[in-house]
Figure 1 (cartoon, rainbow, N blue to C red):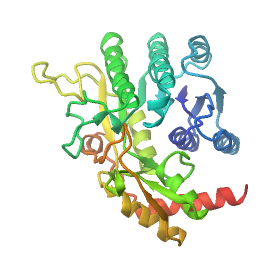
Figure 2 (cartoon, rainbow, N blue to C red; figure 1 turned 90 degrees about the vertical axis):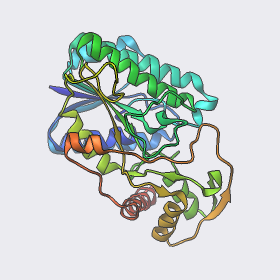
Figure 3 (cartoon, rainbow, N blue to C red; figure 1 turned 180 degrees about the vertical axis):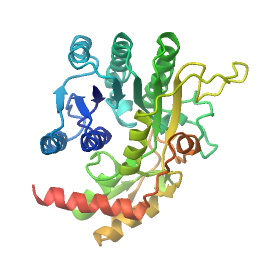
Figure 4 (cartoon, rainbow, N blue to C red; figure 1 turned 30 degrees about the horizontal axis):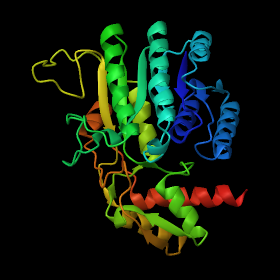
Length: 341
């Protein structure tokens, strides 16, 4: 039985495939290797995974495809007949959604609909999909809880992720497909995305270039180390939700349902000031940043903080990597990776 992972060439997808391979799980990956950021990094992730799978003697491959390509995705499901699906493919980035909305409609809505339809047709055991902490939008009461309303997104990206949760619920209800949505909170670590703060800051500081600090540095983020995310994700995949027989339709819980449906926050639950994050980077590099302070960008929010008690109870695991430790591991990887280029 295969586990299908979309976005397998992406940051979280790569780390998940790595874990699955080491666990001896047969994996079929999908990625479109688009040009949103450096394709070379994605291809290096792919190469790493193929070599790892070969050394572990585990069946693994990545197929280059867009998840909105209905016929091709149907063919992949028909050929490999996965019993579990993890949808991590999406057009990422809050700021990019301001200038390139079409990419988000195609991948995050049409593409996700294609995945749902294939899951229905093949009666899969569990669909896990990436939502985002951005769904909390204009909410200011923190920590963010899955029981809060998320009806006020401040970016199209966030709106598409909220839509994914609604679409998943309808399929859980109509077709009895177990679905779990995970609201990721600022994931960072080795092999990370070049458009994310840690990557941008590290590169700029090493090259003696200024770093852009938005909202004049008055930001807090629930930075979550990627290994903690993968441990949580691996446990979630192997624990599909069931119907909540105590669900109260007169007082509905946004994170659960009478259908086999769950939504969880997945974060470190330890919000960090952006300036403290930058300080950790500076200490590991051994150099101070040249700082350029700028106002809050459209679509951004000043703070995130996750209440992950529901997920911790569900999978009996809590992220525990400190910011200083996680940043250090990224910078060690970054120096090693780019010194070889």
